[in-house]
Image (cartoon, rainbow, N blue to C red; front, side, top):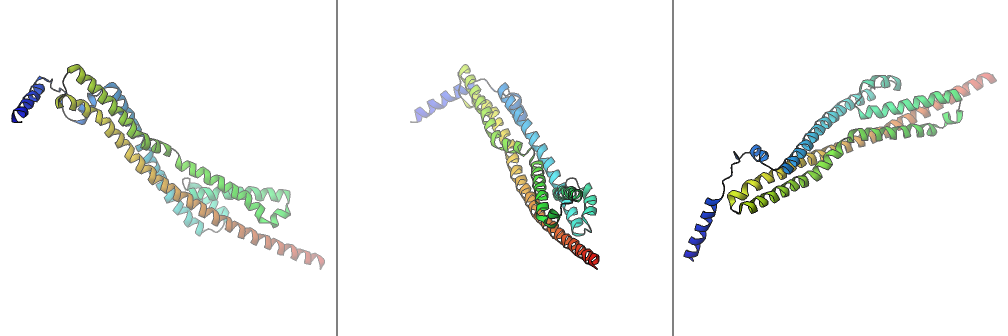
Amino acid sequence: MITTFLYVSAAYGAGESSAAPYSGGGNGILDMVAHAGPMVKFIMLMLLGLSVACWCVILLKFLLLRRARKESDQFIELFRQRKGYAGLYRDCQALEESHVAQIFRVGYAELNRLSKSLESKSLQEIKVNPEVLLENVERAIVGATTSERQRFERFLPLLATTGSTAPFIGLFGTVWGIMTSFQEIGLKGAANLAVVAPGISEALVATAMGLAAAIPAVVAYNHFSNRIRNVENEMSHFSADFLNMLKRDLIRRGRQEEVVLDQSRFAMQD
């Protein structure tokens, strides 16, 4: 047993001494990237581009949602202190990023347009029944809600795509690099650690870059999806409150007009 162990050790030492040493120039990540094959370098460049694009989207979405949150809080304060829809409409024109302000602007613009149309056509039946008027306003608000949601969700598919595909792209680069390493091993005729390790370590950098691109993308996608879901809920709640307030105002205005008409009839009869 001891004789066999000594023989194997001597053979392994002879194999190591006959192997060509790795002249990579260092053990850093940059050295491993520099000595990787052309295909692995192309995959690393692709992953780097995806990572940079994802971080740009993350930064832009963070700034967009923060501005939208700040301006929406300002609009809610204006909405609670409002003295009239027309004044509130003028005051919220500067709040361009606010999703709630946009819902109000679209709803008020549609209401104003329909009111002018009704005055020109003198449709008394629609004036008495505000439900017909509110249906058009509600459809406009639903369209504005969809547009705002699409605005906030823009470029989010890039994060989802990167999070789901980047690890596999990196794995492909690793597999390709290992295949190349084994081909070099076959050409050199040596299979010890000094020959195998450098090529495999260079190939594994692709997998590491794939994970480095995928993990932030997945975390950011889940975070922004949750925040956009909250934004959509805020728009839905505000839309319901705004429509209820419009309905109460239209009903009260209709009753006031009926009172004025009745008073004018009595005056004419007298």
